[in-house]
Image (cartoon, rainbow, N blue to C red; front, side, top):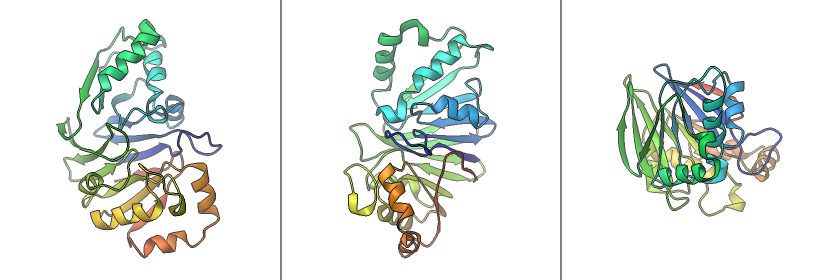
Length: 255
């Protein structure tokens, strides 16, 4: 299993961080988690085209996590070579309504002509795929927000939070995973409801007993905080003694 951070930023524009998007390659398939604005180009820069994507998973439908679905479907319809293999899209309750809303605006420009779309709505449970399993838990962010745990047949595990506050759902998803990808939006002294801070991320990593913690989804104020707090990594190590990485766009990890 290979993980690439496609976009490590948020809904606030950044010179160095793109909107949220994460890529996982497993069993020769490309799984995309969230598609913030510009994700299609970011994926292309990472070597993945609109023809390659097999599955898209949405943690929730806030614009910074979902808007590039329009660009992806538009490219799949109009560009050459045309896509023919099916595209599976999975998300929480409201996924089909979300797509129908996009259709009402963009109509035939995002309606597939040469391939099929398959939608799955899930708020909690398991999904079996060809070579891996997805476990879904509701998380504490918006009305319908979910996180994902990916388990390969070879025993490799990864958890992806999307946006969340501290909650039992993310602890369950992250239990003893090889790699945990958490949003880390704000500094500890500027905590916002529905989001995590460094110490909360470290606490989740400690309680879940994961092997490695990857932090992403940084607001600009947090980037400033990192650069001006040289003691932060050491402070987090007092809570969680595993590997902690503050990710950047296009960072790749093998699991």
